[in-house]
Image (cartoon, rainbow, N blue to C red; front, top):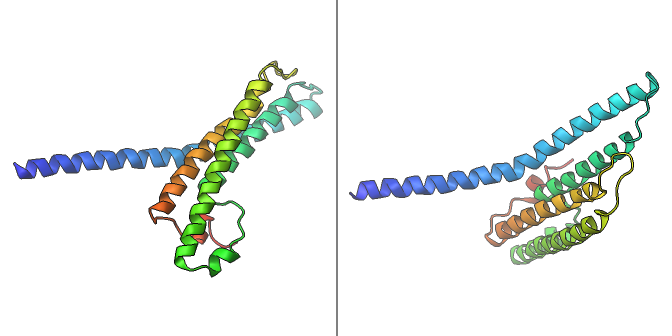
Length: 185
């Protein structure tokens, strides 16, 4: 009977860990896949646009606006991925010379500031989208909110990533800086 109880507990624990692992993979992998897809789409679109403009003399008035929207999404999702990888710009001379307790306090401060910035950024981006939704892009005929919604999407991702980073730091599970940033260049 005790063995059956332990087995059920183990299976429940594995399901919880499996769900957490899947969530982590989605949070890490999905934005990267979106980036790859957007970049491929931008390259294909720009090549087709150049070919149609210079070889077939068919200019499309919407092509510049579409490229601008794709580029904004690439930049903003890339920014969120950089936050997730802790690839933010930092002056680490203070941290390198600090003792373990001060280093931990500085890391907590850094993660908290990134979280606060991300929340403020997301709120401001949302307000901008609300304001920009009344304007349209003449070439595409859609609202300019599509352009600015990239900031909202990136902001939401940054809030999630920053909160997870802060929790990780508070638990003492923060990775070494060179691992986080991808190593020395």
